[in-house]
Image (cartoon, rainbow, N blue to C red; front, side):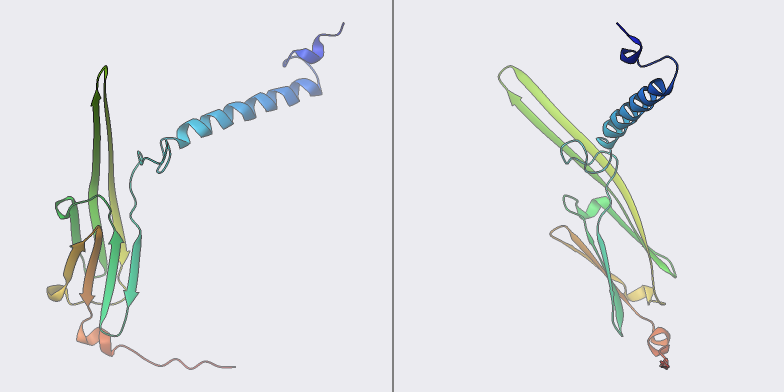
Length: 158
C-alpha cells in the first residue's frame, strides 16, 4: 500500500498542492476571524468603529451637510469649521444589560468617528447653523457674497 499520497508533506507535486491548500485554509480562517471585529461584523454589531453616512448638497446661496448619527446625543457630537472644510467628530457608546434568574449578561460597544468634508467654496462662518433632530445632524453653511458671485459660464464645444 502506498501511503505517500495520504501525507500532506514530502516530495513532489502533490505535496506542493497540499501545502498550498493548507495555506489557503489557514488564510481563510484568519480572514474570517478578523472580519468579525470589523464594522458590521459579529452579528451586525459595530466593534471596530463607526462611520456615519454623509450627504452634501449645494445651491446658489448655501452648502448643506447632513450626517446620519443614530443613537447619539448632541453632547456626543463635535462640529468644527475651517476656511475650507467641515469636520464632524463623535463617540458612539452602547451598553446592554440583562439580568435573570441564574445569569447576568452585559454587552458594551464603543466607536469613535471623524469625518472631514472639503467645502466647495468659501462660507460665511459667522452665519453657520447646526441642527440635530432624530439622529440626523444638518449643518447649513451660507456662502459668502464673493463666493456667490464667482460663477462663470463655460462654453461647450462640439
